Picture: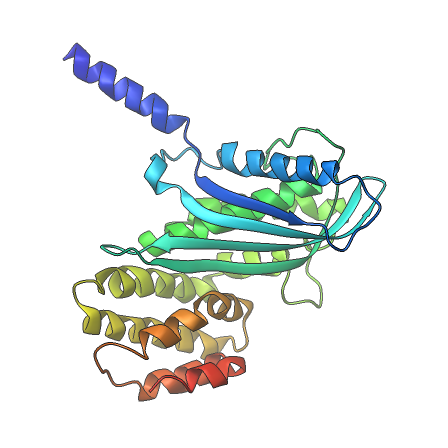
Length: 294
């Protein structure tokens, strides 16, 4: 009995200290010149350490449950420790009984600015604003984790979305761009506002059905999996009728367009007439790709 208790204690301690992300970080500095490149290498390492060594919740996460993601930053301007950058955030999710990984997040943020002093510690506290770099990284870390959790459990990512909302609320007084409501649809404020809105509950449900009932059964029931994905996209279409041209629809198809085309251009034949109509209505910018579905 004591041995079992010891094993459980050791495992609990191990999982309790585990972080949720397995992040790859890369910084591109091609647009800045006459600057010591070492500062960017140190920044890259600081971001890597922050994302991979920070716990964003109290959930127990096994090593194989960490979310694979990438943060690719392009430095557009650098002067006196002030940075202006573009940040590309991507994440993937493993599919049951398959070597395939499905794209979940594909977000490009063009309003990333921050001050960074070389070797400064990046410390996460969602209830206080320590630096805009920390706030942006923590915000997207929580978006990645929420989006992943929503694909395994209906609205499973709510805790992480609440974290992202808290980060947004605290950062709004900082005067950095992206944290307040503006004419721009694609900013952090609008993203978290939509994800937390009851209006878009069906979007999050569709993410769950698309993956759990669709992709995750395809190794054994390919045709049924395709039918379930058609049903999930039908749910997205109903959201679209209520809120056309929404940011979340764009976010979904930024990640999923090529995957959907690949799914429905191979394998067992299913009725795709309604699917193509729905896809064309929700995301007309991808009409050339939808035309490949036959």
